[in-house]
Length: 516
Image: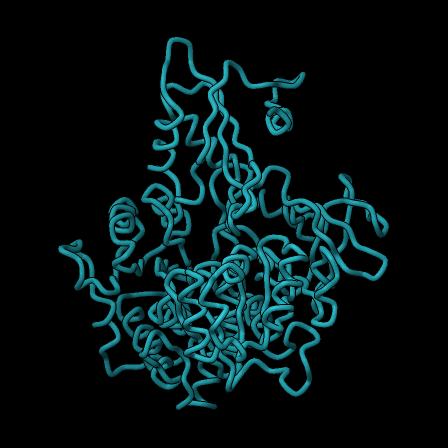
């Protein structure tokens, strides 16, 4: 049996060649044009020697070229490795080398960090630059991405198996470096199909297919699993249109919703909060919106209620992780007023709550959320021990704490033990702490989350200095900023004499959180 995730675009192009697939500003691409562009890039990759399973990294903002490159790689039988446009060279070089990428597609906006990382990665042989004409200079190996699309040879969609890896998405871990979650063609194909056709479980029957006539707003980064699956792949599955926004601002989002008649909006809670406080939203015509979905962090019930009172939108909360493609559960549209729930598992997915010994817990008791089903990753690339730990007993261990109520709805009460959720982005303290420990003046370091009115949480570092050393909080923050993405580095740094420890010498982060 063959299955290629790319077939969802190829099929829609065959069915609706003249329908608008991608729109940015006033420019449009039809399905036929998008499909031809992807096939052209696939031909280019094949000519450069790409083989089935070869890794191609993408570092692109929300632009149609992301989609062209994404499906071009899939058409060629390769594996897509989307990388964050916020990463610095150190982070990029690690991930490029870890996934053994042979090709790197970058946008001019990210050129500085990308070029440095490319030069430090032995496996990377090919470099393509989008909008490179705007740069004063590029490495000698760089090729204009646009020229790669200017070819008459259009590759066929490669025959891949359902369990072959289609995408590797890096997810931070509590044990240091990020891990690459291997998602199969079937993992992502079925998740996109569910999003498109099952319509978040209880959308009205007469409009239960996200397809022709539907327009999805891509404000979530497409390099992230939420935007990639829910917006890009889900919309393309049945011939819908994706409207691209490079970087979210509430003003631009409102303007595009009105101008492009957007029907589907997926975002994190901070985006909805920004829209509620956007003056332009008060007078704009947002009546085209049919479906609004939130994930990445709990959505305050008052915000949901205000959205419905002001705009008539019901916001459905969903839950998932990079390792689950991502969707695992979602609220039914007629249950959006229920406080604090992420709904029930989607069809084909099981979820349960267990204690520290992986024993099932009854309704109402808090424990770790476990997931199994068609959406769960194959494993972590080149990390068998981490894979075995995460998938022990045949269930994916999320690290999230929650409970299930008497009606079968799941609730998340806390994220992973130490993870910080900053504005919808996951920040794992260990990764920041490893940078802090490279600072010449620091002897001990701990990173914790502190409440933030707009972002939910912010990153705080508490450090102790080596005897005779001196530095300042601002200098430490700037040091971290040089080695970490913008959303990760600590905005607050506190210097104390010694960090609190337990009997085994382990730093007590709870004590730090509880201190004034």
